Image (cartoon, rainbow, N blue to C red; front, side, top):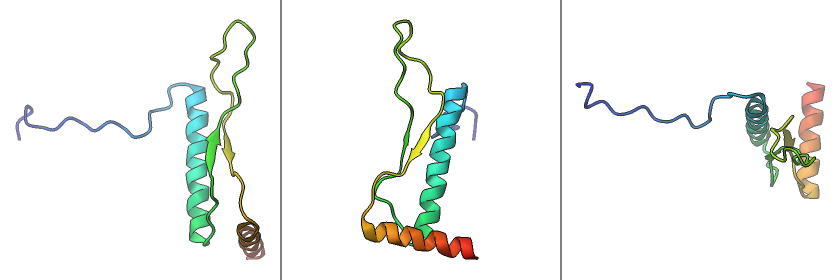
Length: 95
């Protein structure tokens, strides 16, 4: 294949962390995905797993400050899912 025939490189799905705020969000997304996979492997699925950042502080000068941290939001779940999650945690803690 000649250089002209080579396909261009595909873009990365997740942008590189070029600033601390992006790195914190990427860390939270990775943690969310890891938790979702672990729960799924244990037969538990939460209806919502999300990543959230704090609301930007508006002090009149700069209302678009980068996020200082990101949180994995576990959302809400039904009572049966909460019992299943508790059972998985107990089993893991005992083993």
